[in-house]
Length: 103
Image 1 (tube, rainbow, N blue to C red):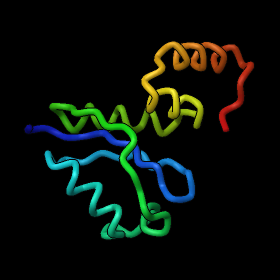
Image 2 (image 1 turned 30 degrees about the vertical axis):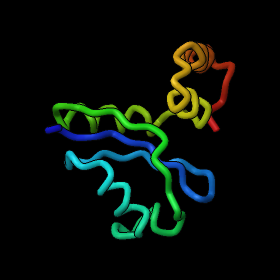
Image 3 (image 1 turned 180 degrees about the vertical axis):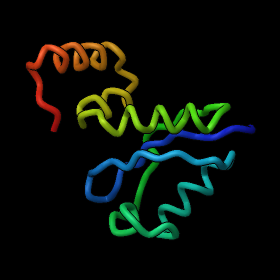
Image 4 (image 1 turned 135 degrees about the horizontal axis):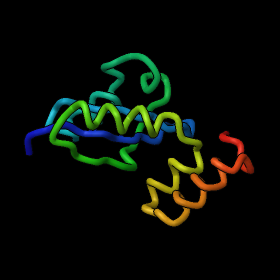
């Protein structure tokens, strides 16, 4: 499948890593993170597990999605991972209203 990927990894410490890959081979990219190939954030938080991915035809769309989700609270990321779009909508509304702090 041509294109690129947006993905979320759950790290061994329970944190989330959000990334994109130009590669059409997502499994290889995740394996590289799990082996510490890239250094950086995931290298010291292994093992990692893929918990969410979305395919895009254009890398620019994947990068825009990555930037948006990096700014989300942990609760919103977890709602996305669960596929709980009702909770996502509620979290977005409560954030706009100022009643919820991002954690």
